[in-house]
Length: 221
View (spheres, helix red, strand yellow):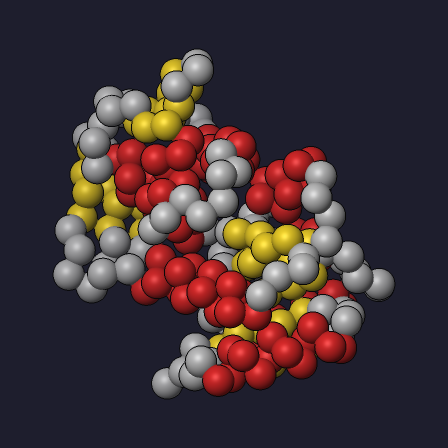
């Protein structure tokens, strides 16, 4: 059964081009013209991944992402014409998994979609990683601290898995980017800081991720 992608953008031309490329790659595609419609479709259609523009009338991509994250950890890729670092960080901090800056190639979008969906699919034969009272199950895409299950986005899950696999090892931001994307195709290392902040908030009160100033991060049980 093909994966379902929800595309949300108020620019008809971009919507149609992206839809056609994704359909040609074997995906089932649903389109929405603004954030309000996108939110309704996200609840009704239950997509496997959402691609949304940042700047839209009625409800922008940030508010759409905030509303979706109240109920779901479905992967979200943001499209943005804004180049300011702050705008990108805000998107990541509220739960977006990735972003693409306009103008972009539709082939790039398809490639990003494939990467994020591969992260979600995981490996059915993958091991369960345990560090003391913390367990990460790749096959079922779950993380538990004692008996408390932690709800993570696909990007947060991969960062957690990478660091848990080698407790005490210091990972640079670029190494963590590489673990998330398979290749650090955007040298935007500060994006990792946003995901780490989200992880720390969800893992509270457990202080498990340690900042090594000037180097990166490490996982400590």
